[in-house]
Image 1 (tube, rainbow, N blue to C red):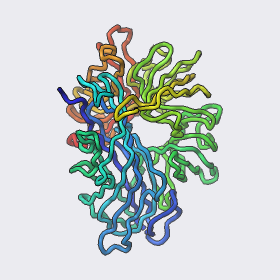
Image 2 (image 1 turned 45 degrees about the horizontal axis):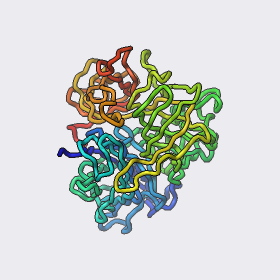
Image 3 (image 1 turned 120 degrees about the vertical axis):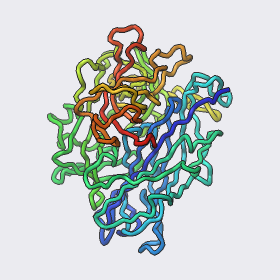
Image 4 (image 1 turned 60 degrees about the vertical axis):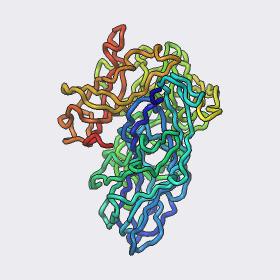
Length: 514
C-alpha cells in the first residue's frame, strides 16, 4: 500500500527584532518607552510552503518564547518575549508568502546564547487521497481532523546553533527567523516531535534599517483612537494589546462608505476589527503600520475560508480564520454556506488594480481553491457536527447564510516552468484540492499542477536574485500570494484553461531551501 499522505515542508518563522538598549523581563504586552539599555523585541511568524496538497490545515499554539543570556551577561534569567499571556494560535499553512506579527517585549542589551520556544495543542486537517482509510475512521476521499500528540521531550525546543550567540546592541536592530518543518516534525505515527534533527532551524533576517513587511500582519479590535497622535490601540483575539502608529504614507483600505467619506485615519472607530500590516517597531515598543485594512464592523460577523464545493445556491468552505476567533466558527472545520437572495460578489482588491477580464461578480465566477471572506447573516449559524469522536474523524461542521462573498488573496507554492513577461507558469506543489465524495467528482483542473500566474506593475517581489520580475528564473521555487480567478472563457473543459492567479506578492526561496 502506498503512503497515505505526503507531509508538507511547512516552515513557520518567528522574527525577533532587537534594538539595543535593556531592562529585564517585561510584563506589559506593548512595552512602554524603555529605560537604561532596554530594547524592544518583536515576534513574527511566517510559513514556507507545504509540499503536497493533502495537508489542508495545521494550527499550533505558541505558549512561550524566551532568549537565553550567554555566560557573563548582565542578566542571568531567560528574557520572555511573550510575557506569559494566553497562547497564540497560528495556522501556519496560511503563511507561505506572509508573516504574522505576534508580540513585542523589552530585552536587556547583551549577548544571548539561544532561543527557547514552547508549543502546544497542534491541530491537523488532511484530505485522504490514498488508497486506504486511516485508522478505520478517515475514509478515502474524505477530509479528516486529528489532534496529534507532542512528544513531551520536544514541547520545549532550545535552539543554540547558528546564528547564536547573538548580541543585542543599542540602536542596532537584529532579526531572527525561526523555521519549523512539518515533514520532519510530524512522525510516522502522527505524533509531533519538535526536537527532531533539523525540525527547527534559525536564520538571521536582513538588517531592519528600513520598514519591512517581514514584521507581518496583525488582526484585532480597535480599542481606542488617538487622532492627535495618529495612533490607535489594537487588541488581538489572544488578549494582547498594542499601540499602532500611522504615518502620512500609511494606506487605508476596504473601509465602507458608512465608516467614512474617504479612506484615511478618520475611518478608524472603536469596535472595528482591522488588519494592520506592521512595518516597524519603535524604541518604545510602538508599532508602525504601513497599511490598515477594514475586516468587519463591531456588530458584524465574518469568516474566511477556502472553497472546495459550490453551486448556484451555496458552497462549502474549509474555515481558515475569523477575526474574533469565535468558538461558533471552529478553525479547520467545514462550513456549508447558503447564498441569500441578492448576495453580492466582489474582490477585496486592497488597493491593487485588478486587470480587466478577471471577474468575481456572481456564482459563475466561483471555483474550487478560491479564498473568500463571507459576511454571516445574524442568527443563521447552526452547528451540524462536533468533530472527531475517535483518533481521526470529520472536522466540526457548521452551516450559515451569507449575503456577501468577497474574493481574498490566497497562497500557493511551486516551481517556475516557463516565463513570458509579465506572466509565468507555475508548477504548483500545493493548492487547496477539490474535496468531494469521490475523486471523479472533482473538476479536471484540480489534477493539474500547472497554473498561469499574472503579474502587474503593483506586484512585489522578495527573496529573488533581484527583487523584481527580472529576478525570476525557470526552476525557481516561489510562493505566490494572490487572487485565484476562474478562467474558462466559456470553455466546457476547465483543464484546457485552468484558473489564473493574479500575483500580489512573489516570494523566492533561494537554493530551493525552506
